[in-house]
Amino acid sequence: MNNYLLSAGAFFVLGTSAAFAHITLEAQEAAVGSTYKAVLRVPHGCEGKATTAVRVQIPEGVISVKPMPKAGWTLQVKNGRYEKSYQLHGQEVSSGVKEVNWSGGSLPDEFYDEFVFRGTLAADLPAGQTLYFPVVQECDGAAERWIEIPAAGQDEDALEYPAPGLKLAPKL
Image (tube, rainbow, N blue to C red; front, top):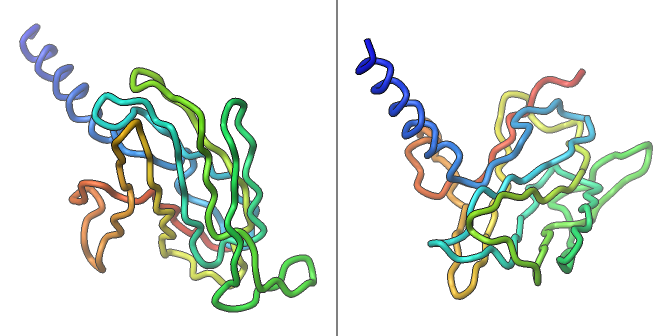
């Protein structure tokens, strides 16, 4: 009995540690047409080095993005034109934040932190699909590129550096 519990406990610890090794979104599902608060969870540095920058690419259809400042970090955004125009509160929106970059801070490898922004999921996004937020995590002389997006039919768990994903639910 004790060997069984020990084995089960080891499996749980080892089996779940991989799931927490990637940068992920706290809420991994949201309804199209809603405001979404994205919380990027950074569980570790790069090869034991402290994280010094986190850069996230905003996918098409996520509009009106506003990042949350983080004490001790410099916040920058890159704006650009969307591939098409969207309606937001009765107004046409054709450009906005395409990338968010927090830099200049230091998150030691042995600590965890979160980087936050909010945006609106366009009402015409297709429910059932997944949006991916590619992230580059920079560390002292190293980087982790969480940018892999699964091909059609490919299991996300097979990717070594998966981009955080958000499943789109039907409009409420």
